[in-house]
Image (tube, rainbow, N blue to C red; front, side, top):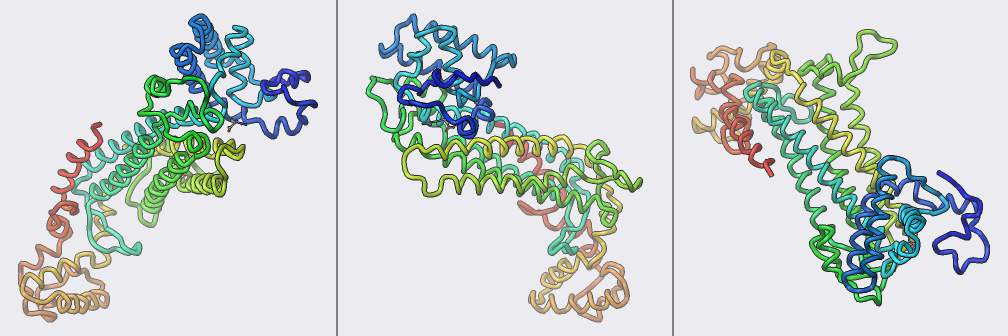
Length: 466
Ligand code: ARG
């Protein structure tokens, strides 16, 4: 980052100023250290802007050709890391414009005709975020595909299902993975919704009121892949609701990942011992040689904090801002960029890790047998024999009390033992008291039966095939 002491006289807006910017203020107000991320989008926007100005007769074809050539050179320097960013030039927009002008002279100075950094930055962020959402959706799909494979592999693996973190009813591990799949499905759809709503071109709004040049916004929108130009210039340059919306969708996504993380942490603990996480996703302890810590899920769980924080930052940033553009909005980028990085990193870690998770089926099965997980099945059985559900609930409650007193599961009691609670119970009761019978009976759409899991996997593959 170079800082030329004489640079003030070269400031692109320096005309009306009589003294140089305070050195600290220059750094304090600059955004180039972080907004240079949008350099390629800024160049793409400038190329189209120049073409549009040429089309409507504001720029000559020669100027346009020079601008395109100059931008090619600037782009090559940026991509190869040779570009010299200058804090004195404040932001990505003015750094690129100054470099262009240094290369091609007056044509570079004409590029900013009919445009302002206000509509320029609003365009750049949209272009950047639009691409990033595509990449995020690709990662979500990769994770979902791993979950589908896992669900297929473990479609009939029985584990305890929990409510209140207490054994509730037996479920299949495949079914559990498909629950995660569904969360991710909605997350992807929220991302796509947000992307679709933000896909309007602000360029042409200029500083706030539009411009007196005969611009063709439809042309620019179409060239940059936007559905249409924005409809109101004041709104175009001032609102960052699309960034808030993205951070909100991200906060929900990260909340989902934190729930998945928490389960992985619990399941891989010595107390549960349901799964093994691959060694390459864990780390050891520097003091306790026996430890294998589930760092990746823990870290993802922890990273929700910063994403939630960024959402609140952006909401607070926008709150009470009068129309139109205010410098406050420069503060949108760091929270937005860090949200993008965090979401992409967390998804990547999960998508890489999940296919390598292995189930300890015996431990899961044993755990599902504890805690009277088929008690509801016994109640349902009695209902089928004609007892009202509330009475059946009462009968089974008493049977469970005996089980607690004698340390026996319902399936381990004799027929005579069970019959003391209801004469409606006969030999066929044992079919529903087994874990296999219990899961197989829940064979409707959305149920945990192995056959339903298989169907859900087939359906899931279709859902993510876009
Ligand atoms: N760096 C600024 C931002 O990120 C660009 C727009 C500046 N516009 C202005 N009038 N100061 O918001």
